[in-house]
Image (cartoon, rainbow, N blue to C red; front, top):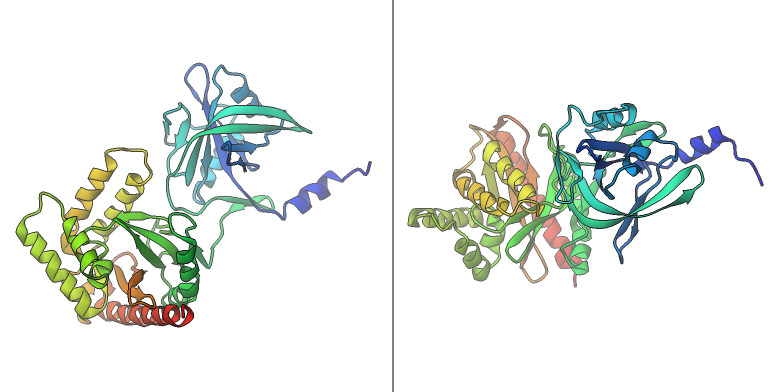
Amino acid sequence: MTKIDAYEFRRVLGAFPTGVVIVTGMDDAGQPLAMTVGSFVSVSLEPALVGFLPTRTSSSWAALQNRTGTKFGINVLASDQEDLCRAVASRKTDKLEGFEWELSKNGSPILTDSVAFIDCEMHSVSDAGDHDWVMGKVLDLFTLSSNLPLLFFRGGYGSFAPGSMAVNTDISVKLLGQLDLIRPHMERLAAELVAEVSIMTRVETELINVGSAGSSTRQGRSSRVGIHVPFMPPIGGVFAAFGGPEAEAQWLAQVHPDADHALQTHFEACLAKVRERGYAAGIGHERGSGIELSARVAYSGRDPEARQRLLAVVNDAAETFNASDVTAEGDYEFHSATAPVFDKDGACLFSMTVWGSDGLTSGADVVATVERLKLAADAASQELQFRSH
């Protein structure tokens, strides 16, 4: 049997980047256990199984094995969690000290700000050379954020900067094909404006951010791909304004139950402005960001009361969307601008959004950004109309 040089083995395999997870559990005294793993993998859908390969001599793996419970959690780390990753890998005890976490409903630590969490029960442990092959039965799973994941590559940690991303769930294959047609227009606009540009579609009473290009210029902000928000005033105005009478009626019917008649009239006037201008706009960072943060929690499925809180946050942002005209002379907290993308039948199939940066933006820059957005959305519409025939 040919003997493989250990150094060469590590060097060549180091050319393959891997994701990084932290496996967590609780010991018999109720204290958290954790270990860093770079060999996590999806194994099976029916039944739902995942796996990882810890070194057989690992003391962290021994601690997880030598306890009464068989439950453990998989925390997919975000690109800004390298300090957590290194702490867990290097510490002998108290691996999570100084880091925030909470218990899952099955009793395993969920690390705050991770990308995703998978709750598991031990399925099997088998021999894999100088490692163990551990498989877990999935009990529950959910995403925690839309942050980019932490990667390990050639001995170092980092992340990656995709040219563009698209969500691959919740929408039809046909819609994904149409999204692919307009992605070059989204990518080109993001490159020209040096900003994040995203594509959203409406699925019944929800809006889903299905594609994104570029990177956010706002501090602490990651890609918005996969975010869901409710189709209700004041958000989703483009789909209400250009989606026909049925879409408008559905949108207005979602006005918060406590709202008075004046607010209903306000939203009707906002739709008229969106039609006249050809775009929707959000001015004010705090309330716009509040909607996104609340939406992430509400649609994670972890807090049954979060949806009601989201509706209240959306309702509170009424005055920040489409309420005032942007002029070249002013300065604005430019949160976003959104233009419609029409299919071959003239239906508003997608919306294209440019996201603003922190602080104030000159009115002249906002106006120029909006005009460039409208041109890109028009070009995307033409692409759909031409290529769909």
